[in-house]
Amino acid sequence: MVESVSREQLDGDATEEVWEPDDLMEMVSHDLINQQQAAMGFLELLEGSKGLSEGERVLVTRTVEALEHTARLILQVRASLVQREWGEYRPARVSLDRAIAASCRTVQGAFARDRLDIELKGLGGSTEVMADGMLSEMLTQLILMIAEPAPPNRPCKLMVSVEPKGEFTTVRFISEGFALNPMVTDALIGGRDPHGRTRDAVTISLVRRMLMRYGGRALMEPVPPGGVGAHLVIELPRGSDTDAVDHDS
Amino acid sequence: MLSIMIVDDEEVLHVLYGKLLKHKGHTVVASAFNGDEAAGIYRGLEPSPDLVLMDHRMPIKNGLEAMEEILSIDAGAKIVFLTADAGVAEKAMDMGASDVLLKPFRMDLLLRTVEDAAHKVGDRPAPT
Image 1: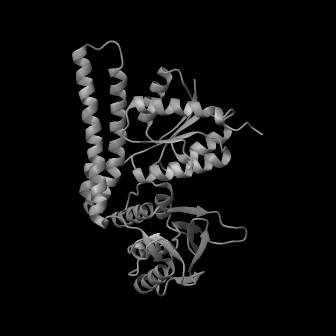
Image 2: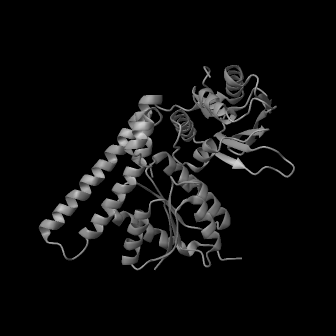
Image 3: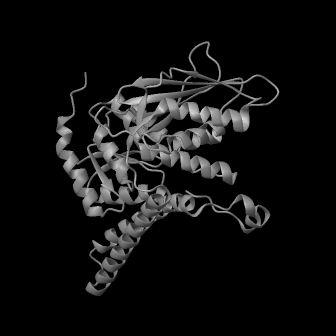
């Protein structure tokens, strides 16, 4: 459920609670569809009961139809907002190695040069996944959020490794010397709508929806015995030889 | 008559599905409000329910992940997936859902789907 916000909270924290319309739509539509599904269902139970006059039954039927129509409209608005933002998804083979390398360069340059050592493993230059030209942007946002808790006063390392796993390619993020941001991992893995700081929450929502768009997913792995840090894994569908290639990515 | 487990983070939908299923003579044997809880409860159910009604978008662990875990516990589990996302629906079928209903759906369709799945209950592999 999307939590309600009191007038005092709105007044006191107005800049923190402003959502992008499509992110708000994504969250609210989930709740609206469920509530409309419930209302439709209860009315259908009523419609099937014996105590209604014919006139009452017609009214109930029309209300069910109106609710169903509204629910479908909400879904159409949500779909068109996603399409407007990103365009129609045309999956293509994209070089994962290049996308990760570019993202890590951006993160090191923009944020973590003195705070974080990023070590890349398993990048041979030929790993491809099914995605689009926004893969690198998604990875950059994800790594920025992961790296944010790294404290500046002690050495921290983020290892990024790539490994094939069946029909997927796994990208593993292992932190050393700092914990991953639980707001990021909870929202990515649990699918919970993130609340709190607006910028983070919107970014998490964006990354989560891009992962869904690519048919990928995120999960936390248990740290192996004797291991350190936290292990966040994302899985992306592997590209095959018959798929189109996105040469711009 | 079927024994059914309901997994959804919306309490009002538990009430709705429960009323509908009870009215048709089925029994709700377990309820869970997120995917993690669902997998844990399913593991402890003896006997396993004939059918699981599984929502997708839930806290802690979503429906796809919960379904994957339940199918790893019981490869013969019958899971009807309920979602508003057509992309998730395709994935759910690929991962082993018995059927998928796209929200919003009518209650008669839910009942038909549940009862169709009932015909497949006999396919459940014998416990070893």
